[in-house]
Image (tube, rainbow, N blue to C red; front, side):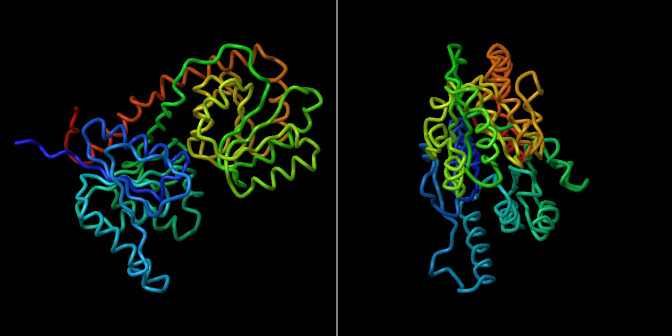
Length: 372
């Protein structure tokens, strides 16, 4: 008699193009290729999504008009009932949920089903659980979780002592598109940033720092890849500073590795991050990088300051200007930093890290994974 395949359900809001969603999709494909049955449950379908891997099914958890109760409290209970029904229909050996409210809902709705739930906290926990209510629920309901995954050692400190024993730090698997030999030719002199264009990313700081370098480096330009509510305001800032011809905001693109492969500097200017995928990917391409040393410590775990990149204080525009000037002027030093940065590619190799995730999830099922 053939043994039933292990089944894992991944629960997230959507498959919109972003770091968390990319990790979820790549992990689903890896697990499927290792003989695991995978279903992705999302609340809704976003406009610009990652493609669903072949052989991975999808279920939507958002309540329909017929299921809605017509008021906030009633709709909350309707969502709970629908999620609980999905868990019972799917009969997974484990549920892996991503981010904030999804984590709380997954644990709450799986209570007494005997289905182990692993919750993944992707950002700074206080930021991800922004309200007092959410923080209370996380610290209370996560007692019922089979495991808690965080991205940094600092993030682990958010949880009370009684939860830390079931909290584990797992790396972000590198996007396979960024696994390639490092570019060794003449770089283009340009500065790049990649990520959602919102206030937390603080791209304004990059534009202001760059504006004071344009005369010194007339061949350099700044490109910020990503979509978000601050995009128009950033373009207007570049206009006011008189550098709109040197600053580009093309929106979200699908070929990021090709776009940034020959760039001279990558900048992450965020106020808060978990383990930033964009920074990791740039380093694994071998780009010289500058990042804010932001909570909850992700950049600080990737970068040894002055060796494989530069760390600067959050919001320190002058420090960013100084580090940009140094890397654009001293090409030899920038090259040495890039050579050190690309060494992370081995540590974050996709199959290696995905295998660590799968082994952890299987350990919560109390069984062994199937293999093809």
